[in-house]
Length: 296
View 1 (tube, rainbow, N blue to C red):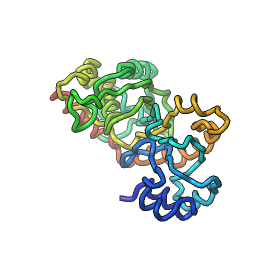
View 2: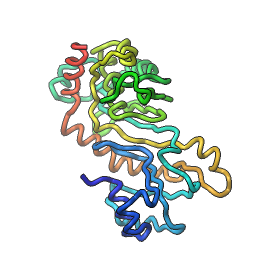
View 3: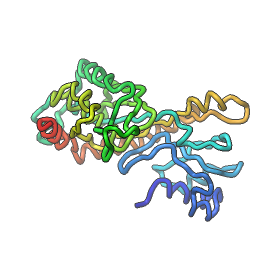
View 4: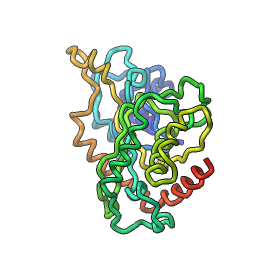
């Protein structure tokens, strides 16, 4: 399966920025990505680190890439910089139709979209109340696969988790959750979101969150993958130490915000909205929520 990394490396090769050896053996040019994105997961602000020449023509690079992949900037870093190892936080968003957080409605559970549905403010409040449970360090062995309860790697630190105000796109109201943490495991965010939806909809209670952090194995619903987006990788400690030393630039995105917002609307949000309206993934997910948590 072709990957975004392959497309970017090919563009660098065709643009004369790396050699054939660097393309075939990325480790020889210290190539690294800051965060993994699984199939179906988009990224707005991904970071790659590798050895490049001093002079780079980004126009030539982007001409070699499909429209949904853009290189927006290049920053000089310290010699030993590794975009994955130096990253001290990652922010993801999860966008879904707002009725996913509503009490079960016959129309949605049968596969239809309720015309003109709008989420009441108290449901947003309730959702944010539930999300606060995740902040801090907890054992997430039940939120991933093939990890034992006593595996130290299942301890994960969540910095913030919140629900934004809904927005209406093409007549359908959508809501976005944003979570920032040090790092995440496979399926972790989708299971966190799945459990939040189940709680807010009334399939289970908030107590299930604390139970999931205990050693007993629980089956938790996995939210559809479509709405998950890597928003940003953070380099706060690196920027504080090197960002103002006069030699290196801070790794941040303020100069590209307009370009990134246009990219998000054109390629990411349009895909999420159109695909969800076509595939209607939530009715089946609601069914799994009720069955899985009823058994649990």
